[in-house]
Image 1 (cartoon, rainbow, N blue to C red):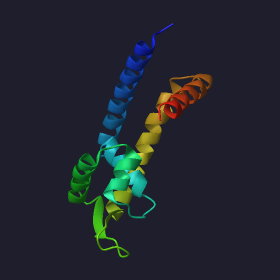
Image 2: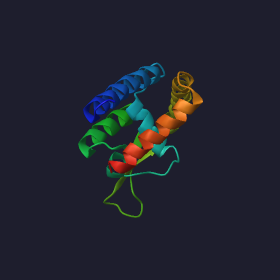
Image 3: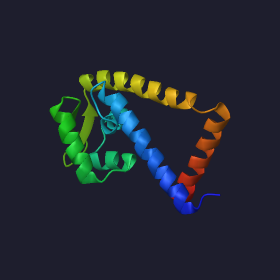
Image 4: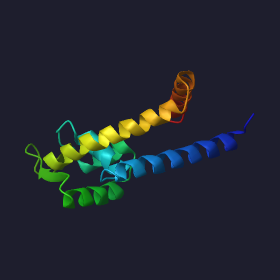
Length: 139
């Protein structure tokens, strides 16, 4: 039976390989996995503050700010002062961002489907349950 250190190492290796694979698949469409995740959170077209996006995506706020800066420069999102509180700035997805989000989501779905095909349905369910338990217990 693997030790907890072996399991941690295996989880880290699996995460890195899957993240690289997803990034590669999405880069062929024109964005990173991080950008896709931001667009996903903004796709409901409700603006969100950068701090909220950072929390939702598990990123530190300065890193999120730099990512949003790049996405603004690419025309994928825009910053707009909150009408209810002029001290707050909200990030909104643009039409260009929505269009890219659709293409990225399709590619991400294909990536996830290919991963699921490589496992049996039973293995997929078991892995999902085990990983879900780890996430719940480590919070």
